[in-house]
Image (cartoon, rainbow, N blue to C red; front, side, top):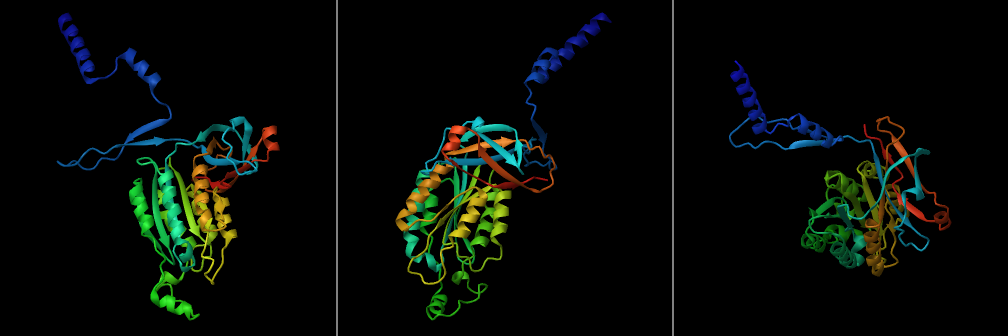
Length: 359
């Protein structure tokens, strides 16, 4: 009997060792090393088949942190990159919040959409727009890390190049952008008549807000959450046919964590419409971006350069909100400089002005 017990004990130990299960001592060590905030749950398995492969694990990270990017510039529009956590404070609905994380954000992958107005009001500046956009892609997009898409629009948007990290494909997408006006609409406009109905021929219209909505909904919102999402809009801001409203686009951008940079430009010789700088500034300011109104086509490169610097000169601030209700409500954000010496410099902070609490 004694021999049998010892034999069974030894066999059991051998099975444990071969199966890779930890002993009591190694089990305690493994418990200490286990990450507490990440849980891995097997994804639902498909019915077994000879050709099917096991599905990957689903990784879920539970957090209620609110993350906000912001940029600081001085009175000369130079970027300030030396702020510390103790130099700022953040408010949600005027209630001060305790900062959980503060760091400079320089290496986060980018998910960008270059959105180009190709209505008739852009005809005289299109070549310069494309040149500046190509230079921007060459200087900003890191192959294999960042991704960008190229879209153009009149009354409807057109995808010129889907999201890619290949600069060659992006340059080709930019190069094929053209002012889109059908001969019939050209004839009608030249005669002082209204263009054909948008359903029949969208080339005589400009639907900025619809194009931005589709860009966010169908492209940027599907990019990974850890990327910095932004639209770079080149347009005069003169919308003539959108079904979506400007505020609807702002709300969707905020919900989707998309920043909008606007470059307001148009052909000075085009007689119809106007440069609506106010509309461009509103969609940019409300989403944490900035609007640029170049004095002429030659200033486009400088505007793109400023956007490049801003994307690489931001801070990430995060906090766990005191309001724990996940009710989908809109929460206003305010970031202030607390350092007395920095307050004297009257720094301007650029950031989204609110967010929607996730349900």
